[in-house]
Amino acid sequence: METLSTNKAHGGVQGVYRHASAATGTDMTFSVFAPPHDEGEKLPVVWYLSGLTCTHANVTDKGEYRRACAEHRLIFVAPDTSPRGPGVPDDPDGAYDFGLGAGFYVNATQDPWAANYRMETYVTEELPELIRAEFPADMARQSIMGHSMGGHGALTIGLAYPDRYKAISAFAPIVAPSRVPWGQKALGGYLGPDHGAWRRHDAVALIEDGARVADLLVDQGADDQFLEDQLRPDLLRHACDEAGITLTLNIRPGYDHSYYFISTFMADQLAWHAARLR
Image (cartoon, rainbow, N blue to C red):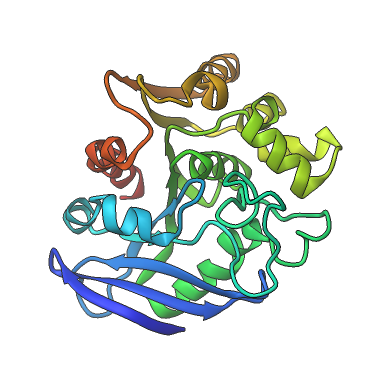
């Protein structure tokens, strides 16, 4: 692991790091905030998965999470959203919603994506082992959150690994990618035309198929420009009601899809995670 930068913040250390990933076959960059702690102490870990076009840097620069993480003594890990580098295929038309910056947290099965786009393995297996080895992380206490495409990732990974993550939340998530244009393009491209393969990467479908957790938290801006066409929180509400999952769905008047929205409610979500990680 190569350290690219470290800065002191709120008594802890905000670092940016790079390593060679076996999962993606590329170098991957990620950020970690480690709050102040005693020597030998192990702290709970919050994973944050970012949205379309983002890298680790968007939430690191704009997310305003460090004060809350220092207060609640949480390690905050922000991976990249896709593999990058020479030879990594991109959307043939250069669109923002597929390819580079749009890995959708799946393991692609279709060429030419399958060789590098293995973000589920990267986020759930490879990077956690690196965090375990290099940081004061208590891997028995993990939670997961994300925004938009990363909200989709947080919900689906959290539902797929319910014994691992003690809390699952999202900002403006794509809750049912099988039913909206962003998800249909991504899942069709990475996984092929078999809609059965899509269901384990669709939060609503996972719940319909029996995935269960105690509760979920979602914050959604009422003025989000993608609300009706791409995000569809109503579908998640219905699925949770049918399954008996407690969903706290906060519709935030006046807020859009941006980090102005995310940073406003970041501390609230982290407090919710902290209560479940104690």
